[in-house]
Length: 442
Image (tube, rainbow, N blue to C red; front, side, top):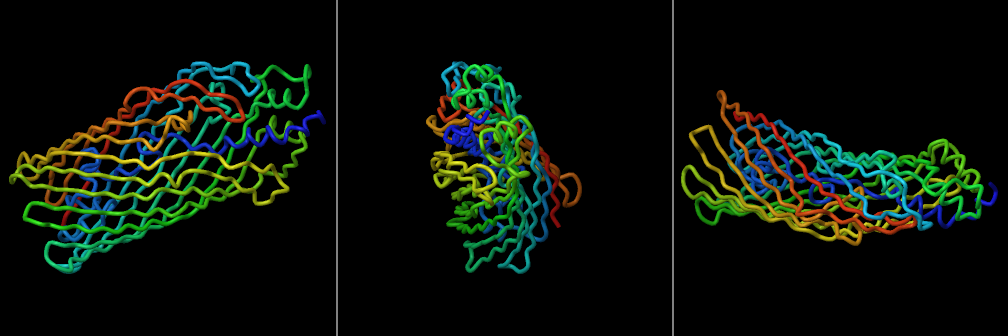
């Protein structure tokens, strides 16, 4: 198989698909809906002064909280994302042999938020949460396997916050958090097509009939900084603005290939010793949230929020080998994210002291455009709807639950061409989110 040494250019395009991120169920792969109230109000209460979870979007809300407050909870996302093929082809032009599939994987994300009023004008807080996350894994017979099979992003962040009221009705806040990131990206490699491209002729198996597998597994640290302000222009009205900056994630890890791929790459003249070390920078987005709380009566409150996510910096990914002589250089991969917004509204009804009911709806623009939509990221514009309840059970202890529906507006069309061929089809995604939370106020 010495003729395979001529495969260096097509091989580089084949491996570039290892940089495809995985699917989340709204707003790229950001988990930017934290806490019971934010989920149940479809994010209209993301920066609410109801409990310490609001510090995620705007730490200035801590100044409105009395005593010691702690919320502990989490969400479980049950997702589906079935792909229906409509003519995917290999790089050599032949149809991709394979099957449709659903790569969605369900999972959960926890949180802990706390606050403590130190003085009448000063409060501090703490947060532990998962700011980013996704899980996608198709069968290796999937039509789109050469552009992506599995993708996992897991982030955990934790850190302190402080809020200060310099004057009555105005509060300022800031927080900082350390963020631990973990990612896995895997795809099948069409070795038969590469064999044909290298001049193997009749010695090569039919295209799509000889697959290898490549995987990148990495971890890294980053940081998050959030600042915010709240203003109460008149009694019963609260306006807030929060801005969260996410540092670029610098993840280091290793590339690995199965035995079939290793044998083929060796024959192609690619020298690989062990699992080559590599690094990847993920330019994560910043978030701006504008919020409004309007008290209408003692028992009814309206909420609204607008979020703008600066996704356009997530434009190109480049995997760098620690040792260029060990492995094969992979060209940059275009992601083409755009900035996107979300607008939401909700109502809160106090049925009796200690029992609150709330519901909300939101429209979210997807940062993914048709041009760059991938099988592992088949997102499109989405509607969110949430409903929840929070009940005091004893003393300062309360328990809450909510349900949120994530419903994309129609099918997401995929028609993406790269060095592996063309993946063409549609995905009809959706997700159901359940949340449980326990709160203590003392």
